[in-house]
Image (cartoon, rainbow, N blue to C red; front, side):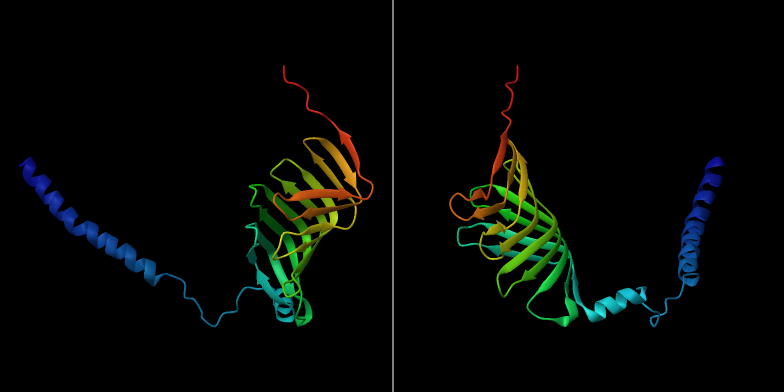
Length: 199
C-alpha cells in the first residue's frame, strides 16, 4: 500500500515537473523585454562629436623587433588623429615595454604621447616614468624614442633612484648595443648610498 502511494507520487512528479519547467521557460520568453533595433546607441552627444571630428582608436598596441632582437611594444588607452591630419597621432596613458636581448626589461609610462610611425619617432610627455628590471626608477618630463630600433633620449633633466642611490642629470640616453647602456650627461650628480651589510 505504501509502495503503491510512492509509485503514484513518482508518476505524478514525472509529469508535473517537466510541465512546470516548460511553464517557466515560456514565461521567460513571453515576458521578456522587446529590444528595438532602431534604438539609439547609448553614447553622449559630446563623445559622438569627438569621435566624428578626431579619428580614434581605443586600446591600440604596436609591436616591433629590432635587428638585435630587442622587442618593443607601444600601447595606449586611446589614440586620436587630431582634425584628421595624417603623419601623427596623439595618445593618452601610454606604456612602452622594451624587452632587451640581454634579458633586461624597461617599461616607460607617460600621460601623453605623439607617435609618427612614418618618421619612426615618438615623444612621451607628462610625468614620464621609466622602470627597469635592474631596479632603477627614472623620472623625466620628455622622452624622445624611436619605434623600430632601440633608442631613447631625454633631452631635459632626469632624476633617478636605484640600487646605487639617487642620481640627477641634465640629459639621458639609452644606447643600443650589446649590451645596451643608460648614459647620463650634462651635470650628473650622484648620491651614492651603499647597501648596508645584513647582520
